[in-house]
Image 1: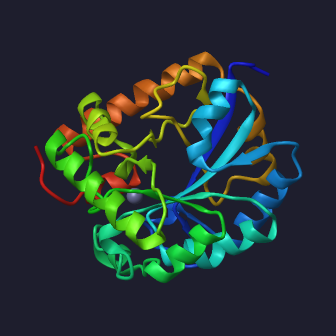
Image 2: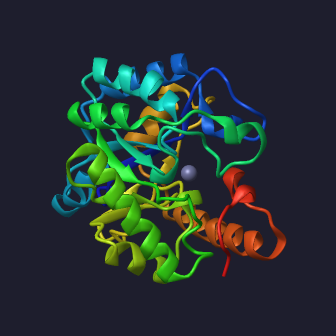
Length: 270
Ligand SMILES: [Zn+2]
């Protein structure tokens, strides 16, 4: 076990029996999710909200955090119910401009997924789930100007704070992408920490405004999930994942390809 790695931040999107070919990689069936969470619960691991990850890293505590992106209604119905039954918390990253409507930043059938309502979001916050921001319009933070990113992030924080009547301090970059300027913009918008993707556990010394997360899939077995949360990734794997992220980003800009969500970017481009 690598003592430097202390917190694995898991990343989910849709928890549903319904999906599409383009969203299948981001969808976990509710029964699978329940098995994954039950296996995690059996471990002697602290389960944190994402806002508590920086402190856990600073104090060297091994822990796991569960995050769910996109604010889809199925997260409330199929994930939070299970988590509450197991006494586990999670952070839901909500794109505030789509609350109570549909996932209209996606294209085709994916754009008709129902979103969490403001009432449900407020109720989840009261039940000790952390509500974080996924931007207002689900903009790609690295492809828009820092001014646009900051304005969008600030508006989203205000809308979510009005919704829950509490503080919103965590941000998840839509599509996982960020840049130094985007990280500064999110910080200027009042957030205290942010997460990206990266397929790596978070380590002491990682950038607080770009903490890596590990994507969980429908075919991730409970045993694999426990291993992801409790064992280290070799440095070579870490370096490989970083280079992969760079290649994805370059490829997306110049050839229009990338990870599952990347082909459906909305909003202005630089
Ligand atoms: Zn998203």
